[in-house]
Image 1 (spheres, rainbow, N blue to C red):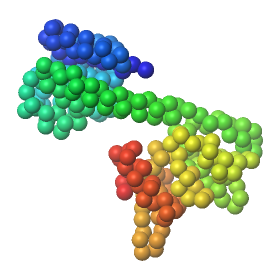
Image 2: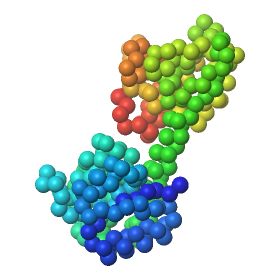
Image 3: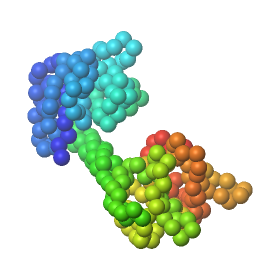
Image 4: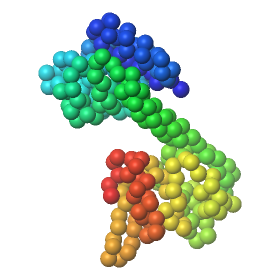
Length: 254
C-alpha cells in the first residue's frame, strides 16, 4: 500500500525535485501540495495523509518552523501522520526531533539519506496498518446462546474460572464461552496482539494500562484503563511482558 504524501513547499522547483525523488521509491503517492502551514492543516482536515514533507521556513511565531509547527499541531489531532522536515542547514535538526518529527533532511537531497529515512517511514506505516487491521477485526465465538461476533479491540482479557472461560470487554460485559480450552483460544488469537500472561488469563496488549510488581509479596498484576479490577501476571512472564509492552506502546505505566 502506498503512503499518501503532502508536500509543503513554496518553491515550485524544489517541490518538483522532491516529488520526482519520492516517486522513484514506488511507495509514495503525492496527494497534495501546500504553500504554508495554514494550507497544510486545512488540507489534512479534509484529506487522508500519511506523511508530510515540509521545508523549514518561518511559521507561527510560537514555533521555529513549518515542519515543527505541523508536528506539534497534528500530533494531537492526527497522531498517525509522520512529518519530515528538510532544510539547507543542520541547525534546526534538534528542534525538529524535539517536536517529534519523523526525520530531518538536508538540501540538496542525499539519495542515501533519503533511502534510510524512507525505510523508517515505511516501517512505521506498516505497523500502523497492522494495528488498524487488528483493531477492525472481529472473532466469531460460540456462547451458550449461540454464536456471537466480537471486535478484538473491545476485548480486555479472557479468563478461565471454575472450569469456564469468559471474555471481559471494555464496556464491562462478560461473555461466557462454550467449548473452548485456553490453549485453543490462545491459538485463535495468535498474531492479533494478545498474550497469555497467566495460566488462566489471556490479555489484549493494546488495553493494558499498568503492570504492577509487589516484590515483597511476589505478586504481579495487570491493570486496564477504566476497569476497576486487575488480573494476575505470572512471575516468569513479567520481564517478557514488560519488554514487549515497552517495544510496542508508549503510554504504558510500568
